Length: 309
Image 1 (cartoon, helix red, strand yellow):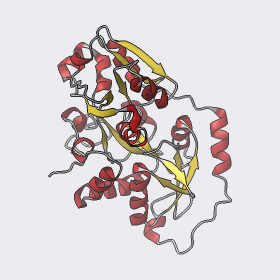
Image 2 (image 1 turned 45 degrees about the vertical axis):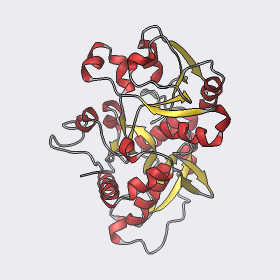
Image 3 (image 1 turned 135 degrees about the horizontal axis):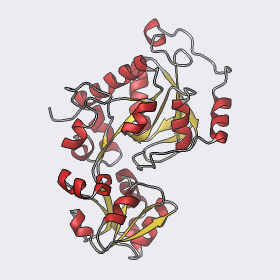
């Protein structure tokens, strides 16, 4: 995910069991579903079953609704398509497992597109791009990978930033069970930089002003630098996507069309801004990101959505 999670995820039996129970035939299907909506091919006509992990401010479930940036984007899309969303709370492994076994219609929450994941499911066009964000103490400035040399760098255990940090010359890795540990040690001066998802950092700035932290965006390493040190690839921006089962082609195409329309009509910029993000950072793909899917799961001439065009 944008919390970039490990790409290899075990499909835990307990997760599958919980999803199976949640996806039983007892769901109440809405009445008066239009033929157009029914043709989308959701598991229950008119219902969009969504696997989601609580990860505010990207996704959380309140009163049976998914809220947060991804939740708001999906709600907008679902309304346009005439679908009623029904969340199923699980963990990250369960999100991917539910899609790949077609026990849910879709999962959201900043799942990072990758060549491996697209082999087992379908990705929509990117609702946003996740820039490489750093939590730093107020008054400190770090712009490039070279600026990180010899520093104490923190992130959460299992996130792929671990690999990038380990490749920075003379830097010391500090890995934590969760983001709170990163923020605590950053505020106390025990680390210099924390690598986390950008909206998590922005939310912490508001919720914990005593920490006196700021958000900075790392200048991505060049393609030449990544060729020399492949682990630096995780310091580059990545594109997120809503993830669907392989056979859900009609639904994927319909969701992608609505996502693209949200870039054009300003709705995507409005939602990113609502959660403290900078549309210039979140809604404009870097050159390497723009071409990554061409000839893989998109046509050779495909251009990803962007603002300002």
